[in-house]
Image (tube, rainbow, N blue to C red):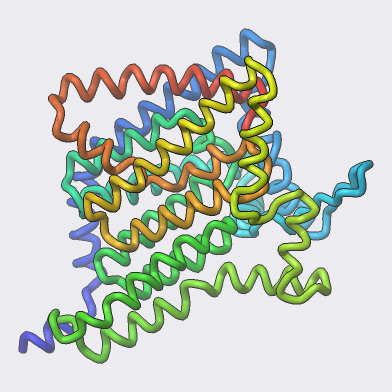
Length: 395
């Protein structure tokens, strides 16, 4: 009877009953997250009004958001030919966000850009909930709340409110990781596949699913779930996980006539690629040619050292392997890509497990001290976000 009950699929009613308490538990994190994002948007509106710029344009009609809306409106094939011979093709942008923008514009009176903002807003809430779920599962409720608030107050947190794909990707990645941690293999694989349709770094989610699946084999027979149905679900999750990214990359290869390397050729037109960090190292070294620029170089070195230190702490604290693999791949791809260097902080945004050690420390602190810390950092983040978007911005 126990085996039969264990093999019986959970009912939808039971799933809803479990989801409601989970949402109630996440409420403090979600309320705090909304407050931080609202502060950032209000600050951006005030700053933009003082400068005579449009917050809507900065959030939804500039930089990458323009490329996403062009994909939604025109499909793939749009290119910009630069005087130096470079070709910027919209094939570099993965399709899930433009698909959602096109769908939303078809069923609502909103423009593609406005749908992008709506998708980003909803996805950022889903991401905050997923991040809380991961933190709560691994280290408890207070750590989960602190983890969400830390993600919200990151200096580049304003990107979470832009018509970019970071929020959508982080939501899919966080819930895929949570599904892995709780043994829901098919769900984990499906979400990893969708993440792979969102950004190239979807490979990090696939790697996390695969690492968790392969390391679970030695433990077969030690848990009640070690039966045939469990093995089938795990195998399905492993097989499904890479389909999104692989499907798009192969389609681009077919579209460009360059086979499996077509997407790399498209990225090369943007001067994007993986060079092991050589270009980034040259960029940092170049900052030491003059005194004012040398301060920037020192700051970049300290920033990279801080990332490495945080990751080492994550390992020492015994974070689950899927989180370590996911974070490691995200950080590696961000730092070792030859892309525009100003975008690297934005590329690191999905690496939320990296701040789990800080979340644990804040969860152990007095509530008044934690609140003061988050309040001051949130204000600084809001000011920086408004300054950043009205300046160089996140390319």
